[in-house]
Amino acid sequence: MRKREELRHTYGFDEVALVPGDVTINPDQTDISLSIGEHKLDIPILASAMDGVVDPKFAIELGRLGGLAVLNLDGVQARYENPDEILQAISEASAEAVTSIIQRAYKEPIKEELVARRVKEIKDAGVVCAASVTPASAKKISPIAVEAGLDILVVASTVTTARHISKSYRGLIFSELCEQMPVPVVVGNCVSYSAAMELMKAGIAGFLVGVGPGAACTTREVLGVGVPQVSATMECAAARDDYLGETGRYVTLITDGGLRTGGDICKSLASGADGVMMGSPFARTSEAPGRGCHWGMATPDMNLPRGTRIRVGVNVDLNQLLNGPTSMSDGTENLVGAIKTCMGVCGARDIKEMHSTEVVVATSIKTEGKAWQIAGLH
Image (cartoon, rainbow, N blue to C red; front, side):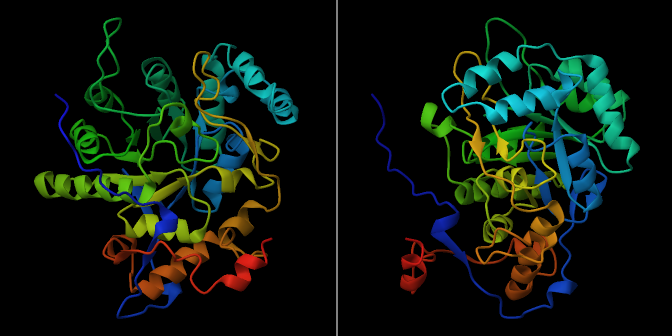
């Protein structure tokens, strides 16, 4: 007999708010750096491993600005000598035809020489190089990327667990991968305490939190699976802190997906994240390769696509998105300034102190007293 369970309430970004601190700090005195293994980034922001967001040129520019872009080694950069032709075809396709066009484009085999070339291009520019593989391709592609100079390996899938049951093959064993790889391994995605704990015990350096929140992801619609990001981050942060207490080893937590504004980033950090990964905001930049479009890594799936191409337009450059000056009043630009200002208001000198910021349920936080603003939207 199925046991009766009381549903627990979970929260997303628009349902919570942060409580200001008793002491405030000048924003320019805050430290917003993020560490993954031995690599330290000036800002706690990563660009998603999406073909419409990251190519080598974009990765180099974001690296120079202090962030980290993750290149998709299962994507068009590793399949085509000239991926721009494919990117243009995808961006220009109609909504009805685009999924089939993407599926056909990703039938082209991954080429080992392109994997090495793309990684080397980023490394030769003198920035930290991170790249993503799927669990299915990790054993084959990872050694090639590492030999070419890869600094951080990301193993990403819609849902990642330390244990996978299959009759047909022996799945990827993360503990073995972490032992074999001479670089930090980041895996994702997960949303629960238990899954995060098991992944950390496998020896990973960091993990991604979030299933289905991204604008280009349709996992929540197709599979009905997902947990709102604030609650998911808090659950996994509790596991991270408990694991630290048990072992003395700190594992980096990155909230991945569903973030649009500086406020969303700040709420992630207060919920326990060390950094965030974003797709749509970066896809809007003139440096992104997608021509104002992007799509999820699961979009090319031949049997059950769990992503879609979305159009966000091109209306900002990368430096303005991160550092301003902002031309918008909605928090979608000068993300670094928002983080520093929020940390100053909350009295947090660094991101670990930001974890102690009080988070409250505030379902009316975006509408309270905003009648004229809301009316102006119509």
